[in-house]
Length: 54
Image (cartoon, rainbow, N blue to C red; front, side, top):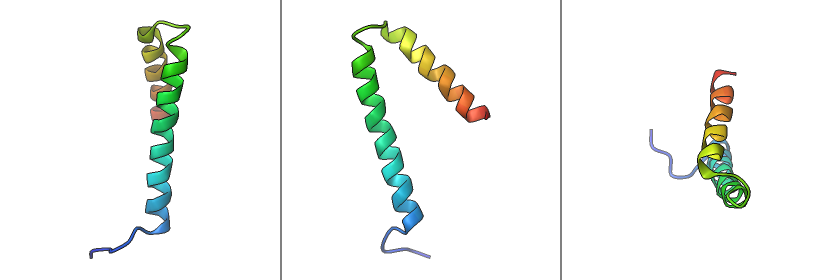
């Protein structure tokens, strides 16, 4: 079955992922002024592990 348009759930998921990626870029740019990029990458990975296994 082929859909011609996105349904509500698909549209909401697409917007949510786009929003998360945009916020991630903003946070990375802001944090790079105060912390080392490697440290922050590790902190983001640790947070991602928490969300994956929660």
